[in-house]
Image (spheres, rainbow, N blue to C red):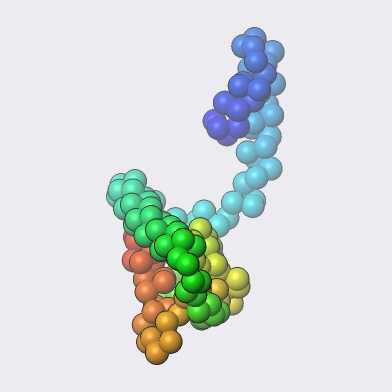
Amino acid sequence: MAGIFVVWMALAGKVTVAEIVVGLVVSGGVALLSLPHLAMLDDVKLSPSLPVSLIRYFAVFFWALLRANLDVARRVAAPRVQINPAIVEVHTELGSDLGKLWLANSITLTPGTLCVDVVGETLKVHWIDISPGADIEHATREIAARFEGVLKEFLR
C-alpha cells in the first residue's frame, strides 16, 4: 500500500490534504482488491534471515548473469557462430508455484537460456549451446542448481 501511495503522491505533483486523503483511499482500495491474488506470497518463509537470503540470491543471480552475458557476447563476436541449441528438461526440487516461477524467471533472464514451459516439477528450457557428447543430465542439473540452493532458503 505504501508503494502505491508514494506513486500516487509523486504523480499528483502537489501535497494537499485532499491529495493525501484521495491517495490513501485509492491505495488502500487497490491493496484490498489485490489481496486475494497474492496468495502465492504464502510460499515465502518469513524469518530474520530472509534479507540475507535475498542478498545471497541476487549475488548468485548477478554472477550467473555476468558469466552468461560474457559467454553470449563471445559467441556473437566470434567469426563463426558456435551454438548447438536444444530444448532440455530441467527437474526442480522446488515444490511451490512461487519457487518454480522464480526459478523459471531466473533461467529466462540469464542470457543463453529461456524457460519455455513448466509442467509439474519439470521446466523445459531452450539452451543456446549443448556441446555434442556432453553429459546432458549433469549439464541440465547445473542450470537449476545454481539458483535452487539459494531459493530453497526463503521459498517453500
